[in-house]
Image (cartoon, rainbow, N blue to C red; front, side, top):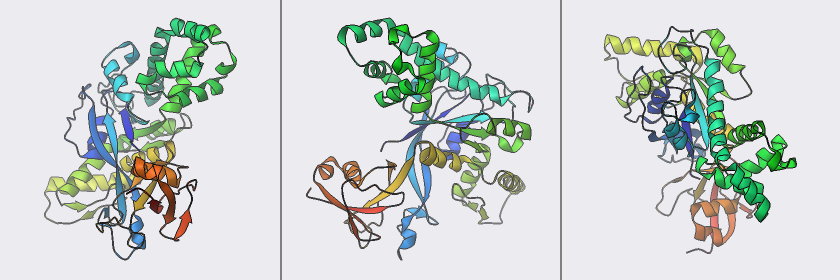
Amino acid sequence: MSMTIGLAGKPNAGKSTFFKAATLANVEIADYPFTTINANHGVTYVRVECPCKDKEKICGKCVNGMRLVPIDIIDVAGLVPDACKGRGLGNTFLDELRQAQAIIHVVDASGGTDAEGNLVEIGDHDPLEDLAFLNREISMWLYGILERNWVKLARKIHSEGLKLEVLIAEQLAGAGIKESSVSLALIETGLSRIDHVKWSEENMIHLCDTMRRISKPLLIAANKADIAPSKNLDKIKNFDDRIVVTTSAAAELALKSAAKKGIIRYTPGDRNFYLLTNDLTKAQKKGLESIQKVIYKLGSTGVQECINRTVFELLDLIVVYPVEDDGKWSDKRGNILPDAYLMKKGSTCCDLAYQIHTEIGNKFLYGVDVRTRLRLGEKHELKNGDVIKIISTAK
């Protein structure tokens, strides 16, 4: 499935550093607001154990037994209060965010930047303010779109007898809101039981806030955690029931850069790194020692954990490996485990067939679990890490 994660937050919280660390893309990074004006699009990776560890021959697509499955990631312009009204680069931000299935909210946990991203003393700004305002801005953005034509929509529902959730979804389609999300939000808020003509402004904002939460699940990256006061981290972790990951995007970027230069061996998500040379400058040695302390304090840099938990916990996805040769676990050319597909938990063998190709889905017969050699029917529910051969009459 096509998969996009959005990086959101106020200016100067570390979004661009996180993006560059996750993708090694060449983006501008600076300690002043609005370094990012146009959204940066890139590719990052979900880290999973590769099934080739169960075979004598490795696939050649994993690193030290870890498979890195590509996904799209967007670093959007920094968001400031009243962005929903067009302040700052708000309209640009919100337009870009519609593409994302989930959001990583990069927060400056150190409290070293104010609400608009200007530098202040560490601990001077309360990061809880940043957590609350992002939700509010996205919800009010949706409300602004819906409210704009609400009178006209309300009349249309009455006069033409159209379904409420269909029209709301059509109105918000440009924001990435689907009909299923609208239906769930109507039920959860209780507004499905109230005549839409009688909805108050408060009702509509509540609906938009619920649709935002359902359609754009959000994980908090408590960035700059290595220099953050412990009270700030505690407050962020207790803010609500969302997933919080302590991160140091700067440390991850330094490790990725050092690995690229052949100075260290490091796989994203590792809790350690290994020197490959002793020919280091004093600055390099001091930098790596500093990063080692960060990893010791946080457990890891947190960047890979953010990506993995967004994909597997927030979005509830699994990784499945289709093959053509059930003995070698390869395609026709002999490439072992050539593809890794991200699919929604609960997907079936037939869903996998359609993901490979429409014709294969249309002519699906059955699947084969190559580990057990068991035949699987079209409604068989796939598990994370399954290696599956699809049998169809497609040529």
